[in-house]
Amino acid sequence: MFEITDLQKIGVGLVGFGTAFLFLGILLLFDKGLLAIGNILFICGLACVIGLERTFRFFFQKHKARGTVAFFGGITVVLLGWPLIGMLVETYGFFLLFRGFFPAAINFMRRVPVLGSILNMPGIRSLVPMAEDEAI
Image 1 (cartoon, helix red, strand yellow):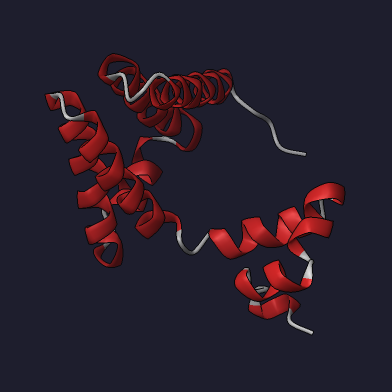
Image 2 (cartoon, rainbow, N blue to C red; image 1 turned 60 degrees about the horizontal axis):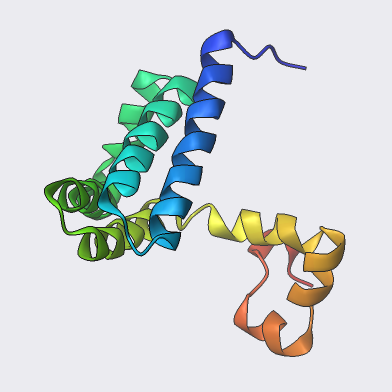
């Protein structure tokens, strides 16, 4: 197994609190204060978990430029006081940045007992395709 440093443990906590603040901000009709705090905590936690250098390498790759601009532009719009527009732009950037990770996450969810049976239903299975390595 690998060792988790104290800084990474703090980062996991920051990401968790950031996600909770984002969820509460959306739940409370796009409260800009909660959304701003959630965004800041999430980014700081990500930097603590994977390190500053790897964070910069992830966000500033040439093929991820559009997603990075949309993600950080959405955070900026939220901080400027337009939470609904900012969250829409930020969500678009999030999907552009992490679209390569979604097939692996869906295949993991297919192995979870309740979610797997739902994702493998005939109508949903055609909407959520399998990854190339697990195609039958």
